[in-house]
Length: 601
Image (cartoon, rainbow, N blue to C red; front, side, top):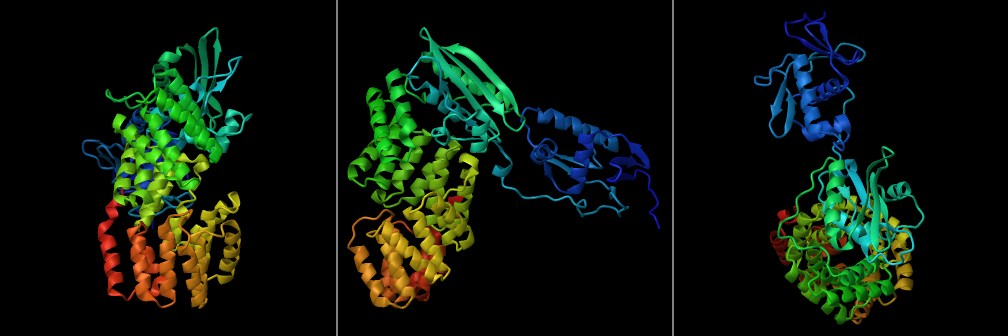
């Protein structure tokens, strides 16, 4: 028997897409009706203004969401006959959002439904999506030099980098770092490059000089809407470029309906005001991410010229430090590169203690063999850098790696995820494979490693992770195949030799396993950090029953930087150590030394 209508009854009829009060239809426009349905679906729950904006407009770009939302809420209250001072239906949670609290009778699209209490609307789903999947991304391309000029004096790349640094902290917009756009193919349109990079907005333009006068043309393209949403053409004086850059950044932010934070009064200029130093820096910067050792050496030469010309150029010192550190750790382990990296890092932070790139450079050095992996100090520098500049993918990646090594694996994967928006197409960092391996999420680790190997055949790091995955999966045939492949790539690599020893130990061949340990210990250098070789030696001794020796190597592993205690507790190779009191004490001490809050950003 149908329920008798009560005075003040409110009915929401989904089939007819209408609101009725005491049986009478109440006119309501589409946006207010959509929001009412959304709020009723979350009855008694707080719905944030941000969630409402996403629901109604997908984004608050180009619209005054504050004013529009207030207007929509007013229309809903009028339709419901609700008083905001004494709400019966719609409650405002100041500074947060809204909560639907009133009684409502929901009529489904096909048949009447009983009064809605705690159930959600049929078919309405609330998905917990990570922020980066919903946010818009923006890329600023280096300007193109047109006309007869052959030297842009560094302006093409420098103008783009200046906009990136100033727009990098815009709320709700992921601005790709300059490093993501420096080596793009020639001849592609702005729309094609936007698709390649996986961004919605792309800022691009050109400069030319005529009779000593610079002129530039700039536009911002919205690829989703297929329209140009900002343009600017003007003459400029290269000596006052920073004023124009700030003005353009503010106009772009305004177009995106985002406030641009004011520059601190005591903030140092980002670039040298010496034209030759500026130009040399940009030449070095353009080559710094090439990955080619010869080009990286040229990069260091240009950057050295820049800081020689202007010794107070903090960013020049920081970038030179980073390039020298990468050269030392990845291709040339001579101490000269490391000493140069440390010197220029120190100079950068003496000049500007709050330079994000300087803090990242120092974190790279602190978390390395020469400083015996100062985890906590490196984490502090990386967090500080990201608080100053959000779009630093190297900082997120290094933070994920450090947290992985001290056992904060969930936080590590979160950092890798938070860095994804600042990679083209939100690509997964290959380094995240280690966090998944050490937490035994092997399918995720396998997918990342296989893609890494496909993109970089013969690369030592993915080979190492692939070997770990095969052994943890007890796939001995695959492990043997990978060992053979690894021996062709790096026959004298301790990390891979000890992996071969682990395979022998797993298969019960103790003599061959120990022979691998002896070979690895006789080789002084490794492409990877030595603590991983030490860990694998501990595993070998554990598997062949030499528990005391195994534990001594495990302690050496921890003391030289690898303290991933959750992996120690799960790795089958360390099964023989887990009954030792000293093993339990070691794990407990690591848990206390590296508490969970270290991983919070």
